[in-house]
Image 1 (tube, rainbow, N blue to C red):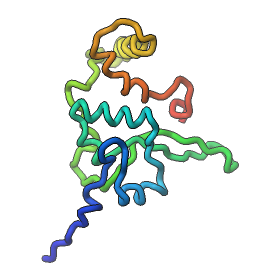
Image 2: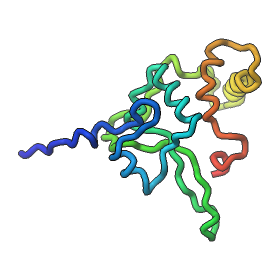
Image 3: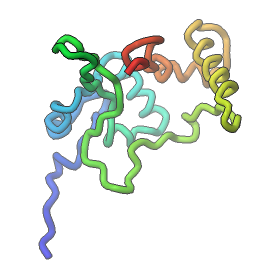
Image 4: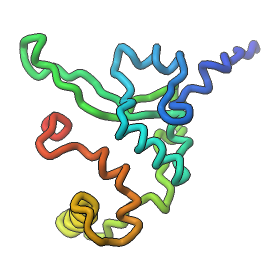
Length: 156
């Protein structure tokens, strides 16, 4: 059987470094959404690279997707989500989070109250710039990417 040669440029998609994409990934995602290359997003991508999650940046990035919420053309909001930078074969992980980057929310069965409170406490320590565990301070680039309260990301 014939083997199809892969185009090296097409298979190496990704954010490359600090947010630059390959031509193939930009063309493939332009119709469905746009890649977030804001200052905060670039700092977040850097945070991922510093903490061993750089492989994710070859598969996905943060993106904005248009969502029609009413009848007129002005009734479109931009929802943020994960945008594929290349085809991801079945069985390949979409996103991998290194153990050291995971936030321990405990085991609270079906009641999310205690884990949510724990997460909110970590977020508030970062937001208020008060003293807290160093690991929570280091997550600032992650916390900065969380949706704002009552933003379109929360309402969509």
